[in-house]
Image (cartoon, rainbow, N blue to C red):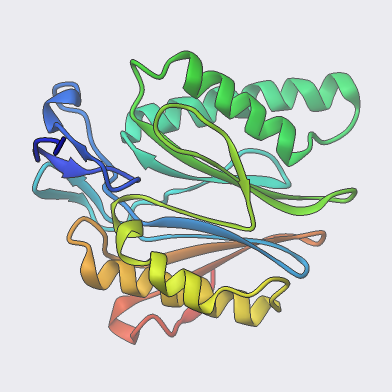
Length: 230
């Protein structure tokens, strides 16, 4: 049975009625992704935030620090995803204080899932969690709408992800170098921005390794070739 087409595409390419959003709520309408590479993980996102058919913000930062070694990409309702990230960051801070060690990415992903699944009827949140742990290396987890949890070598989400499944399948390689990983993420997000009207602006990235987090920024007026380091 064919579903009625209303509203905008969500992060899984499923049509969602925009009336589901609360009055005045802002939808990220986005392209996000995270990958594992030889030395850690790379997270990337566009920067366009939409309110219905209007662009509310051209330079949104959709990459959110959860702890020193864990970051997340947010898609869906801006308010919902910011609230979820704040709650998880708070509890992970408590965990680190009580246990005397940094939480693993799996622990963080489990907390994200608990919050998203327990409130799945109230939240519009698709989240990708990625981080590096001394014992486990880099890992990536995806939580789509509904609150299920999936560990993957790479994860894509947002309205723009529907346009880049083929690109990612064609160019993905396990254990890429950092330079190749950055090129893969940048290439995928450029394609998403090209074809998805709800994605656009700059491309932001975070490279997470045992040395810490390094932020990168690529500008459209420079064909997403620079300036690079932030």
